[in-house]
Amino acid sequence: MRLPMLLPIKWAVGRRGMERIFLSLGSNLGDRRENLLRAVEGLRRVGELAALSGVYATEPVEFTAQPAFANMAAELRIEGAAADAPAQLLARLLELERTLGRRRESSPPKGPRVIDLDLLLFGDRVVQTPAAPLPHLPTEDRYGAPVVPLPHLPTEGRYGAPAFPLSHLPTAGGHGAPTLILPHPAMHERRFVLEPLAEIAAEVEHPTLRRSVRELLAALPAEGPRVERLGELSPSAPWPAFFESV
Image 1 (spheres, rainbow, N blue to C red):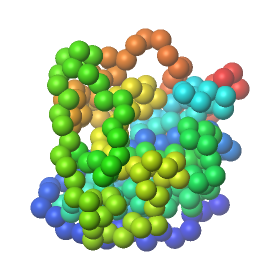
Image 2 (tube, rainbow, N blue to C red; image 1 turned 90 degrees about the vertical axis):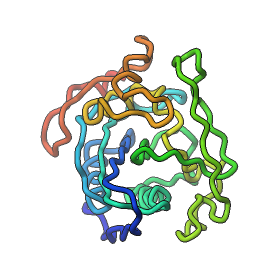
Image 3 (tube, helix red, strand yellow; image 1 turned 120 degrees about the horizontal axis):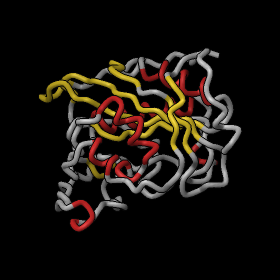
């Protein structure tokens, strides 16, 4: 089944140059391969799809009583996007998730999902939704570098972007939709994010930790949930029998 028509984003013009945007994709309900293929099809209508990682089978974390995930990373590129572009992209990702069958408002946090589209990095931008806490930021002792404080964002709009109407999205703190925080506040802790991301962005630097994706991946403990590369995303390429064993 093909996706309904999604109109391309008309990005407002800003003064920035080309920005590299990185996303994490995941699925653990239904046909994981088909879900990822349809998500990638939708992303091609959002911006220039510059790179895709392979697909990784991963054990669930935190809420472990659920099926294994298929995860991957993607890179979008946007030229000269304005200040509200991350909020605009977040809204489009939520729209795409819903088109693919995800219902955040009726699903448990961290629970099974048809598709999960997480915005990890938007160039070197550091964004915090007003009144939203920043969990999981590392200490100086752990990473050997001070945490860079986030700038205060205007409160005229819920997502710091008064000109873009996002009033239909839940406020920070609910699990119906994610809070807009960039970089993603837990990406440096998740092997299922960093393994695929390192395929396409190993030398990209985290804007606040000042460590590359490769370095963040190397800093993770050896023990932890299992992550296994399955191969490239393809309609027909066979995947190992990982999902039956987890």
